[in-house]
Length: 164
Image (tube, rainbow, N blue to C red; front, side):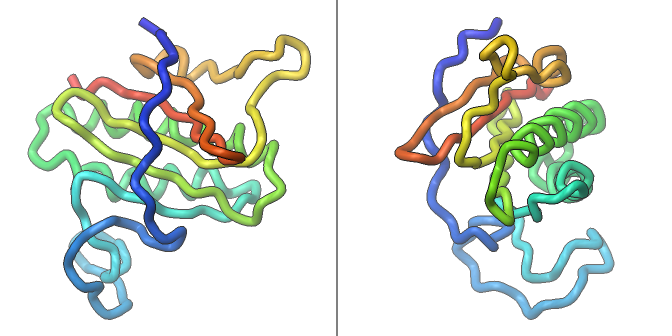
């Protein structure tokens, strides 16, 4: 069901923060266990920026592929959820990237017991010039719900992917 209600805006975090956490950052390097930078900390949400370039969708896909299993933990459906979330986030990022003048896009992933929520911040509406509607076929088919929340001049286009 697509009711397109706006999600509350995400908690504020520095644009370069990969994960919001109360513990101090670790020294910069790469973890052998996850392949992520050691200053990335995992909780139930993660915020990260990707360069607004042709590689943005693949970069966001790569990040979520590594971060989301850590957020989901021992979820038996994690593989399917990660694949769906990767596809949805990549489509959200590609659409935002095509319509932004920013150098970076801020992405967020968070999870609760039923859904993984994905969001991309951007400054312009994501609409087709012919239909005046957002055209996101993968998000439409894979997500339970999606929409855009506007906060001042920042648009948060989001999708909710069911975990089971």
